[in-house]
Length: 353
Image (cartoon, rainbow, N blue to C red; front, side, top):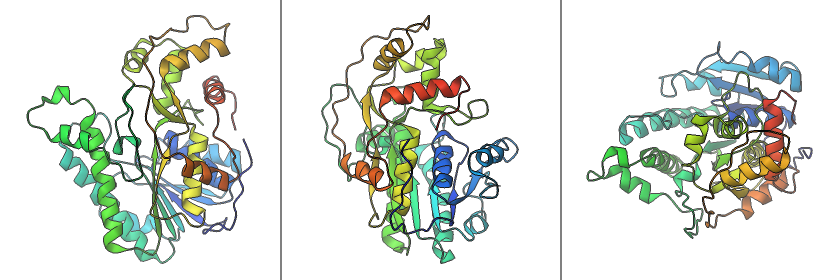
């Protein structure tokens, strides 16, 4: 990949950046890019013992003494954030409380997350050192991709439909699908924008909204593959993965390395403040990925064929994120074919950049 280039970053290289949920697919690549750009990183994880693989991994890639881990088991634990933000110049929040398996009522889940984020932002505002904060939202906070449905998404679009369905008392819970989770993403993001509007912190605040992440995993033996694991599911014709994949609508994707550079730009590039940045590089479908795998690896036996699922017809604000990608030295998004090759190589134990 192209070397990282920073031009007059608002946070100088050598500064300390806090990354929450650092062991995940998205955040681990953010850590990797920050270290490559010359920053030091303090990563939070829920369990230090289970994440002990991270320090030797990043030391092998970037040298010793620039990456540290701290444990934050509960984002809303009183007093947890002041020591975590001590001495940091920037914060990238990736960790979240709710996930797709959550069964809590939407408002309860939202309140728990918001309490933790408010505590983090409050601690950041009191440091006097934090210059920039980047929050991880989701495209699901803006809209629910549906094949063949033309919709124009803007930076001001929120997924009101998901909130309506999640709140409905006439729709059975089993028919709501993942709409309650989408509603959580909407309400938490809106609550954070409200906090920023009310408190007017001295630091910059931006949100990145990634869509499906397809690309290499830094440590596949120790790390959850997240959505990139579906590529492994296709590769291995795993019945459990295939059963899920057939329900995933065509939508947008982004390589985790490109996504990490978008975060880097949101954190450090001059003139980026109070923006929603969509991590949407290219449209895709899993039937398309299945076909591409057959073309890339004709010798691989047993690769499945998936029934065509249509195509995403949404229009998304993609020019600004691409402009920011270029601001840190990369001219174009990584093409899907390259992301697939690198994903397979990461599962096969070959080093990827």
